View 1 (cartoon, protein in one colour):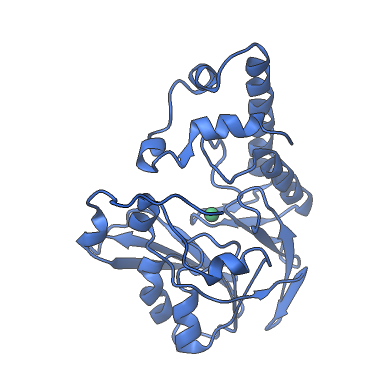
View 2 (cartoon, rainbow, N blue to C red; view 1 turned 180 degrees about the vertical axis):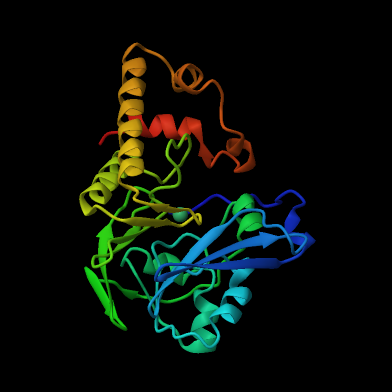
Length: 286
Ligand SMILES: [Zn+2]
């Protein structure tokens, strides 16, 4: 998908410096690697996460924290990267890790052409994550076995068409990527498909995970009920949106009635992430 890019993005924090932050925590067999962009070197503007299980690194964060990630992985046994999808906050370290350590990546076939080229980002994306260097990956199949770790690949295209989640069956560990970002989401991106998100969450419920690692750095133990509540909430919201729409209400009126007002994220993201998009996505065909 081609994206519109403003020619003169407003003066931004990009010029304030390119400092990444990284915090790693061991959670059972998984190393949680939280990364973010920092202006002062002490606090992060946000967190994104990569996870290391055995020799498999799941996602590589954003461009701002790629050096921190490469330094952190030095001396560790890493043999493969799997990217959950092509977004800039998930593939930012791929190219540097390939150069420095010869690390190869795997991703959904639809992600590969998007990772291979530099594409336009919105100013907010550049500010938060930076441009990822183009990188290569090989197409992932239905499962990956590496260094004694077996991961099942679950196609979950609700967030974007090339999104996959990963499931370690023996210990029932779910890596959910950007499919689950919180219990009651109120915003969506243009390329998100909420009907598909509901199906993706159903797939998660069927897996009966014992722990879920989500890509914003949220770790949820015994996530069954949380996933179910999110799915039910989305279904109820869908039914309400459809009911109000059938009464002739506009998406603005539905927004006001159900949520009171637009999310503050809408303006901050040049309206690429908003409650209006969330509502309108329920009105698209399934
Ligand atoms: Zn994403």
